[in-house]
Length: 428
Image (cartoon, rainbow, N blue to C red):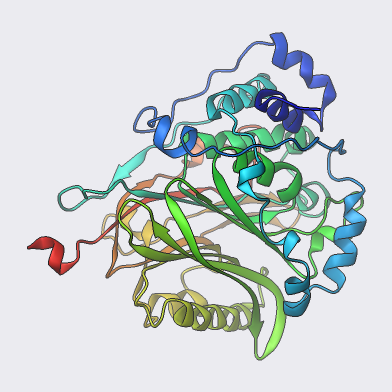
């Protein structure tokens, strides 16, 4: 039976919480602070990007997961480089030609309706970082975000100051979507994604994105009862702006051993200019005491990216939760790499040389944790950062820290606008 895009959108949002359907029909709307820089143009990025036709029927799922968890569990027990090649359907998105578009404004409206009892999201401003004349091409907006795996948030992470109600997936997913819709990235790099196939892939593909997902081989989510499958990295890009040239799923190694951490690297071509660049997303090993392990993983990723970019001939953007402060070796490896990378968020500091004081701030049973762990690296010789989204202040985050009713993750999203540096022949 055919379902309209509007009904598909509603079904995807509400299948976790049937009781909220009444809210969408008549409930009060919460006030949403408009995104910084004012409302972004509605057409080029999201509205014109949505394409295709989908007639798939939404499945009924529970708050954290469903029966497909058993399938995921069986898959991840054997998932390695060869297994990934045998199961490509779990690592790439559905054919966009078979997806119905949805209106991003309608999706945002539905998210607001679900969130009507929560406080409004806080204003975050973009900081203009341009040092020369604007580029003739529109900027490339990149969002980096560890969105907090649902299974880990509810079952493992022990956020002692976060109310249990704030972690409910039927509302938290709307906060995540609201953040994405507010900033309208051209490229979206996510970590700790454990609701790719039932939430992000179907919704974002209907907004015009093409997505790829690579799960961790032994995701800790699988240890949580009623999990929704493994978490992993996801990379989305707008199909109306970019053409996919090459995609590589990387299982990171450390000291020649394959590890539980992964990365995705894709070479894209800008449809406006014909220029190519590579974008990568990763999530390195967590926890104190694993510094050398992270360093080895970072070196392995850099070597892979060296090969993919043909020795830095192709410009590069690397997004990730590195689980490492700027004092760690893995950070220094990226800062001194022959790929000539710079960290975008350093540009927000007065001297342009210091990372933000935090990108994650939480309170666990072990105490309060405030760290800078998330980064957007870019090829300084080929790309310029034209603007970057400022971070939430300590006052906005609040004494209970993250996550909260205001914010869905323990990590802040990072958003940057990039432009290509003019090539010498273009300056003549």
